[in-house]
Amino acid sequence: MKNHILTIVLVGLIGMGCQQKQKEAFDIDKQLDYCVSQAQKTLQLIPDDSASIPRNIPNGAKDWTYVEYRDWTSGFWPGTLWYLYEYTGAQNLKEEANQFTQYLKPLSVEPATDHDLGFQVFCSAGNGYRLTNNPAYKEMILKSSDTLATLYNPVVGTILSWPVKTEYPHNTIIDNMINLEMLYWAAENDGTPALKEIAVTHADKTMNNHFRDDFSAYHVVIYDTITGEKIKGITHQGYADETMWARGQGWAIYGYTMMYRETKKPAYLKMAQNTARIYLDRLPSDMIPYWDFDAPGIPDAPRDASAAAIVASALLELSLYSEEALSNEYVSKATAMLEELSNNYQSRNKNTAFLMHSTGHHPNGSEIDASIIYADYYYVEALLRLKKLQQGEPIVNSVLASFLPKSNKS
Image 1 (cartoon, rainbow, N blue to C red):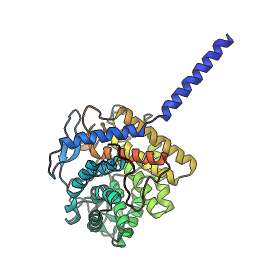
Image 2 (image 1 turned 90 degrees about the horizontal axis):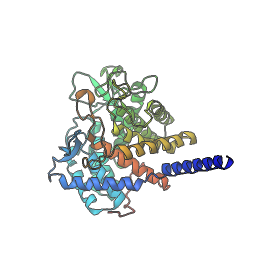
Image 3 (image 1 turned 135 degrees about the horizontal axis):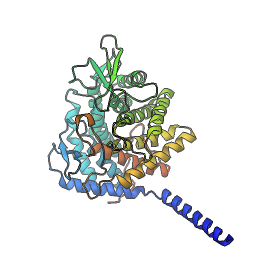
Image 4 (image 1 turned 45 degrees about the horizontal axis):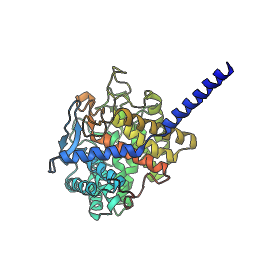
């Protein structure tokens, strides 16, 4: 009997050891290699013209929907190619990344039509300049930053997000936090010094007006252009005005983490941690959010892989600035998000995107349970950050510095 009990204990310990070993065996390079393969397949399918920038693959379809350079998502595909070039050193990825980045050049000289220039130009030309030191990319960033600054309203203290939505005097969406990185970078790299003040003022005004008592974020805040005061918080892409839209909360976590990196203002770090706390506390057990945390139909509501990828990337950076217990939690949960995305959300043989099951604009009925390009971008970014973190390398360069890829895996 004693021998039998000993055998059970030993088998149990071996099983626990195997589970522990499997948990530690998340193969980042395998996931990145998969992304490279999918991107190379996509490159074989894209028509050779400037209006063919991948945006999404609808649920059940195999083919990409393409957009031209003015679309708000246009910078994510070249940005993805730059990340994969960084990982592989593959010359064709560098050449393709450059070509798609060049398609976006007119954005730097055209009047601003919305706030998305940071997404469009910094994800593309920003990564391009970081990896090649090509002065043409720097020029794109500086000019685009000046263009974005024209949407800033000094009375309100924020950047106008949607100039074409005239039913509101001044609207600012939480997504806008991400575009502040380009302004801050430009101010520190030969651009107009006032751009830094715009970024900080926008972040401060958003911090004071965009969040409920529990640190969940409104999608949109409407301001009075005469007094600069907040009128109300509403949503366009969430379920309801007072619900927590998953991707919007991700933008908040990512945006305030980035602003703390650039400014070292303790209030930004606290805001990043507080917005992360409610997000993490309300996540389902598999770590992938529903498109809105309060969406009807849960647990059968659509998920949003893009929000998971954004938050995973943000948490890995946030771990660098947080005390040990929080840091360990952020890395552990970001890794769990990436494992779940890799195991159960990859597109594999269904299409040539990296991930499935993202939700773009649910109330509008668009991009529901789809493959979407910004999910792929932040998925690759998060994988590269985790790889660098494990190797003891800096995962973010607060001032983009040129360096050549270290490996050639293609």
